[in-house]
Image 1 (spheres, helix red, strand yellow):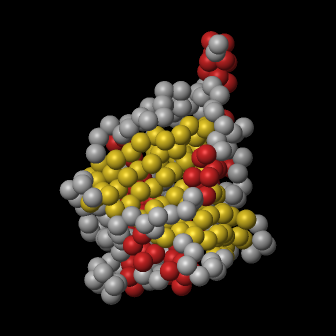
Image 2: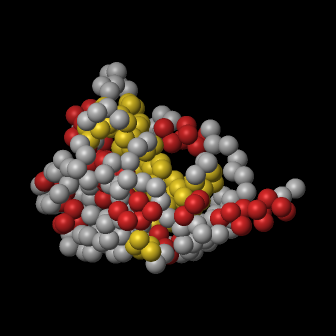
Image 3: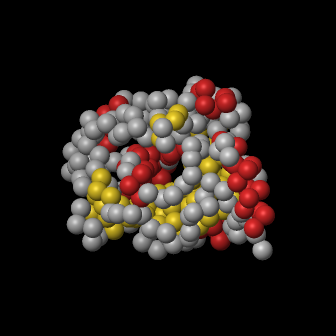
Length: 293
């Protein structure tokens, strides 16, 4: 569904031609698509409260392309435990993601909290040269997700279209049959809601460059989130990191109710930018290295 995704005036990694140009065999399925495998499992463990104050904290491991089968797994926690290990893998056992799932209000350390605590200081960042930890979005972002609302260039489809093909469908996603008397936003679509207006943050990331999701945590605080409801998003860069192939900025997007006073959820996302997708990377990296103390 993201084959036509565009940002920064160019195709994304989910376009087959762009993916192949960058050395991948095809455009991958977006990571949070796999999240829909897990609500049925987690509802068995913790029931309705998981939709109201659950947390899913995932590190993406290997890409999946259209047509590949993926299974989700969850360990059965000990009685009274509020956290467990979950994961997804392809039919041949190739790992797709590893994650922790927990239920609040007091969550044990999540997988991404553990990963962030182990981050090494980034070296000379090129694409992310102008970013700083603690930088916040330029404005409050007002968002909503109606059933037939087109979600823009980043997500060129509607909730209705997603529900026609979603893995593990539920009547709670499309009608008043839910325990809350209203349709709720699916876990994977919470990611869409959180990223829908991210350009308004105006973080000074250089481009054009192609990025992907490397780590993602969705934490519901006072939920669930509802279809057709107004929300306010406030963003902050909470970490910068790099690997051999990527530069990353970790953004925490806090989601508030329409008044902007009551926080209902938050999404932590590691935006990983592929270094070699930025045309001037080598030249600018040499410049920055030359002036480093």
